[in-house]
Amino acid sequence: MHIAIAGNIGSGKTTLTRMLVKRYGWTPRYEPVDVNPYLEDFYKDMYRWSFNLQIYFLNKRFRDVVDISKSKDTIIQDRTIFEDARIFAPNLHAQGYMSDRDFKNYSDLFDLMMSLVGTPDLMIYIRSSIPNLISQISKRGRDFEQSIRIDYLTGLNDRYEEWIANYPGRLLIVDGDTLKFESNPEDFKAITEQIDAKLYGLFPDAEGGYKATKYEGKKQTTRHIHPPRLTELPCSEEGVSHARSSAHAGRQHACSTTSGRQYKDSE
Image 1 (cartoon, helix red, strand yellow):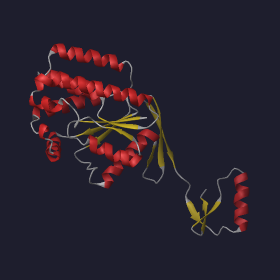
Image 2 (cartoon, rainbow, N blue to C red):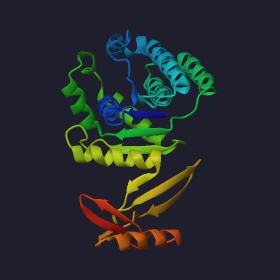
Image 3 (cartoon, one colour):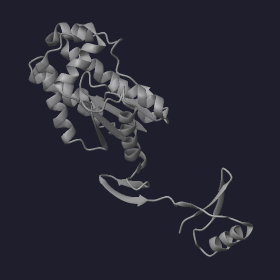
Image 4 (cartoon, helix red, strand yellow):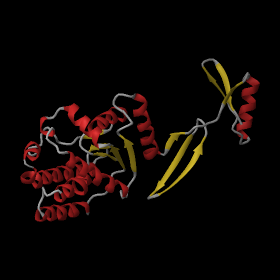
């Protein structure tokens, strides 16, 4: 299974990835930031290094996608190949940091790669405002990121929203401004409950039961499942015998013992 985390620079992708790895035991694929040979040069001279950087990312993430497709593990990926091609490269081209020739060459290569791979089983998009992104970038203190222009971040945010509005696969949107999942366990729990719903079709409802969702392509059907209510009763040998005979008669009526107390399923 392939889970992907998408979001702008500083939105919290890596943090959420690490937390979900710990929660579910998934295998992570992190964005190559510290070992990227172009990133620092790129922020110093974006026009000179934009094409080199995007080709580096495209190569790395295509290898990741191929490896993920061959793996039997559930893999969670910090940033995707789609973001490079649908958001970062077009934004660089639109803002004059990538030439028409380089952008066409890059886009043709991406289209060829996409003919060989599919979308993730779940895309998690962390939506974040520009002020929140700036705050997060400042807190993590990477020297080469301190020169990022606000108009560059704004252009990326606009393209993220356009891309997400037309995303064809299974999608979960996380509000990165209000859900403080790193510091608030309840916010993180809210995210994992939504992930469970998207991946496994189960999430708690207001009545204490669960909603089971079945996905068939873009079509989904939902039904409510309510576990049997347990009511206490003196479940004597006669009661056990009655429960067994009732079960044979097709009635859901059985006795069980929990912590020394006896219960039956309510009809």
